[in-house]
Length: 385
Image (tube, rainbow, N blue to C red; front, side, top):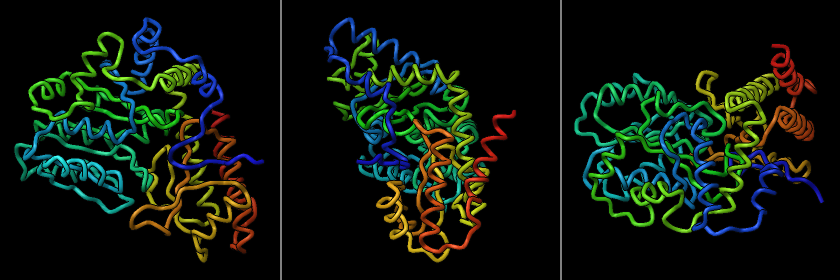
């Protein structure tokens, strides 16, 4: 018997407190007990989104909420812009094309962020754009797009809605939906929110609701007007993921105990810096630059001279350390170190130590302990501030 050290970008480890909360006796979703749970919990999630608007809960993965955001706001034949910097930006492209939208694809190389200058130039020749879709944190590359700047560009240079995939960011990265001109913000439960898969969270502002009300949506299960109507009564239109909502309440407790969400954001930034400095000390290249690096996941290039699948398999088999490999064109070229949600500096130090152990097994040339020391120095420096 051993512990699987899961350092994936999702699903991520679940706190015992959350597991126990989800193990409570089941309640009906049409009772006063559930109404209280729903209303109190969604109210507590608002600071994580940085919004005064209601949080809607869908019993689904994050992809269903992305689809809901698209199909409720745009009709077939209407024009949209999709910013894609990796695999999950391409998800938005696929969703939009499936519904017959006219897609203008702003594509960056994998490992690069979309800048405000990129978006300004891309929008110049376009008109009648109904929505701009963007990924906040691109899980496949470890890139954090400057969503605050992109939101300002969308609002200044178009009349489009700004719809953001925050699935691997919300709960670990700063988010100010209202201040950043985000009209719809979406996330999922299984990443930085410290829950199992199966719950999607999204928020819609008044500007987007007006568009949704006028849109002839073909959706039934994903009809956001229906979710809004039932949310006003503290319920959902269909059977919700009751146990996951109980767990979400416990997640809010843990964030409060950490000192509030700003402290949670600080922890994720610290872990990002620990991982990056550790890899630099081991002379292992990173995919992204420091400026646009994600606080929840780091994309790490294959250590020189190693076969990556063999190395990752060795880490999992011998040290029970489980990383995610690369996707698409980066398959076999990078591995992805998830440091989001229920993850702490001590977990980063453990993982870096085991990375080093694996490197020694493959006769990789490095100064033993250099990565751990670099990560530790980042951590100790933070404690002295």
